[in-house]
Image (cartoon, rainbow, N blue to C red; front, side):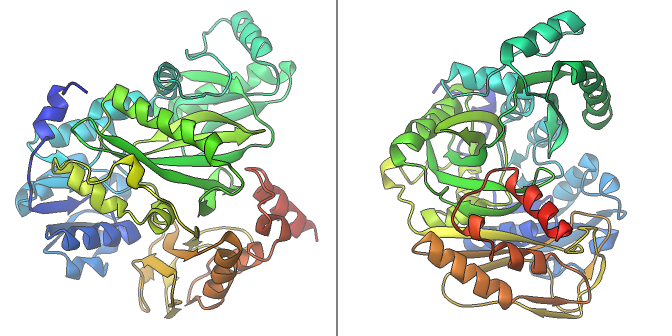
Length: 463
């Protein structure tokens, strides 16, 4: 792969201090990876996170702004200033916040620092769903039926596109994500209202009214493929995950590998993802997200960052994804080839959130008691402790409970035991909900799709 100026600027660069531009459990995870690589860390915080436990284990700890994320964790100037003051040579954005912000990645590089992630141009290409689809089609990655162009303004042309695709269709914001900026249109007489509402939502949420249209698949699973790329033209994929257990388009439980998908079906898709990375000059880690229905894969988007659910792939592949990401930013050549990647056993991850298990409303307050499970094949990624104050300002994720076992059935049983041994008092959590889910028969048998959890919750409420 020919090097671009963006690639050559970072290639071979060495740094000894990393500023972690994030908070919570992912800040702890990145800090641990840095220490194991012999790197110093700079932790940052808002006023609300001054007592965060990872502050005391970092080499430097700087408060960069008020509790509001807009004035702290999203404040690019404050983060860059903190990096300069602490002598950091690189910035790791984690996930969320500025992790997929092309302007921030560019600002980091222009400040003479290394952004631990893809180049700004890669983020821009893959962050826009239309340009991402175009790039994937060019690389031979299978995509959801629908044009690789933005919807025009002309109503009759929009009607023709919908008819060519076939109802139901889904309208999506080109710059959307996180389950926002999308509407399903089951029939023609609802099309124009859906277009108008989604355009306005896209304009307000993402700063652009640009939309695109695709076929709405009615019973798909959500399958992900994890990739890692270096700055020397090498790329590989680390197996696949199933993230179909979603509520309001937000993932709740993830597992690896996705059950029931034969190697000869997934293999060409994984290699197509690798080829796509090479074509756009991608570096670092990333995730290709697909809908899978009736034996066919359909690309929906690429996340150009570390994923919340990366631990299930770490458990099955044996690869420390965060360390690989950091080493790649240092300019190291991947120390694996595709033939070295072997995924063994089965892993589940439960997202433990500070929220009411029935209404799912956020629950802030002080954790008065905390008991976490231990034992073979059990991992907990968290930043909380007894006495920790859960803030109302940020995402409700407070821990990730991960298990690994030789088979899916054994991993299910291990997760049940791990959930039974997890106790969080003083605030409400979704642990009772997760315990009930892991007793569900169809879920245990792998008979689910991306709509299953919403239907399951409706039945529970009606009972």
